[in-house]
Length: 396
Length: 144
Image 1 (cartoon, chains in turn brown, cyan):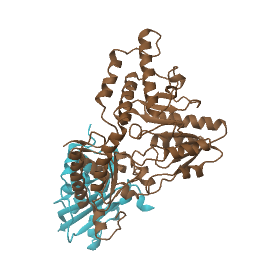
Image 2 (tube, helix red, strand yellow):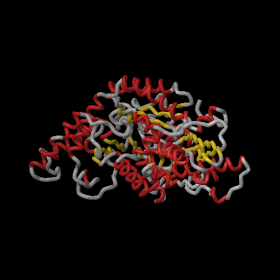
Image 3 (tube, chains in turn purple, red):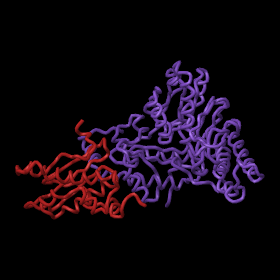
């Protein structure tokens, strides 16, 4: 059996999104910036996609900027807010300890330029409160950037509440909604979101295309200089096929959010319940405010890469926050941020589902994971030291 | 291209000499949990010959494969030969390891040396300290 359970990494493109892209390769292929009628046909399609995506997010088409993906959108949003702040002498930025690296590394860069970066702790459950944000805001705060939902442990953050705090305190608010868009209802106006990033490939759209929503009146700073595309804020000929595929995928996803969430969260809960039976294991992330498709566990006494390789042998595609899978010495910063000790974080497994996964697949995962965990524990000296009492267990 | 060679995958999926050993003549354990890999080697030694060897490993695919290959390479060999096993030889026998996984083969070499040293210490056998150099490629977590 083949089971794809790595939908947070990327999703399979929907047939509809592929079909929506096709005319823009060899039929309406002209440059949207060209004056001739063929170019104008492409420009019309681009505007149509912009309007449809704006409608999905609850904003105007004039507030949609097409990018190469979520990372670029995160970079541009944060750098823009920092530049706007710096002009007024405001150099304090608030974020969280478990953001995606597209956010954290951009903040690292700003830190070197003299910005004061404050990363809010996310606690054991992996979440923050709007109160934490309110307490952290200072006179010189120029930006609050908080992810909508965490990519590794699936926690969904109180974005509307944080948006209200930021609005009241007149601080720009950006959210990296890469994992949330198309999976959770988002309305940027209702939630007082000033800037938002999303990537098409997380909701069955194509890779290499994303959106930065930026509220009218925010003077964006270019990350990519070039022509006058995207109202002068992002140079480069638009990826029209990608954008058309993204618009179709986002519309489909948004139209089915409730239906999909109900189906996927049923599978997720079954998986969580089943995996919880494995002794000395723990669910990572918020058990209530959680993405419909995210299952993240730590299993004590084993290492994640070997777990992934053996699951792959059984046809299951999953991921892990272990150091060995990232090529670095340290395990996932997200798992460390929720207080998992290094050795426990090494033994993590992330399974992320979508609406095309089935209950049979979940049953198959529930058959395979305990087998593989037991097999690896049986050859682990660390596990044996814990069982014999030489070392203590971290997880019950 | 696959992450690992076929040989690594073979030794990872079908590890040789995996398990523990009662009344082992020498036991060596290296690595630490914080870094994500621990290797433990058990030796049975008769007349200076390694007659049996077992290993246990907590770690990634290449750590398990390196342990398995290293045990194969020293089984039936005299101690003097086992002490000459280098991490490079283990990695080569596995048809290579990715650069960032070479430390797994170092752990295998060091676990064997630690097990032999344990045997020497237990039996009051004198040895040249230089044979058991300090680990120079690990994370140095243990020194903190």
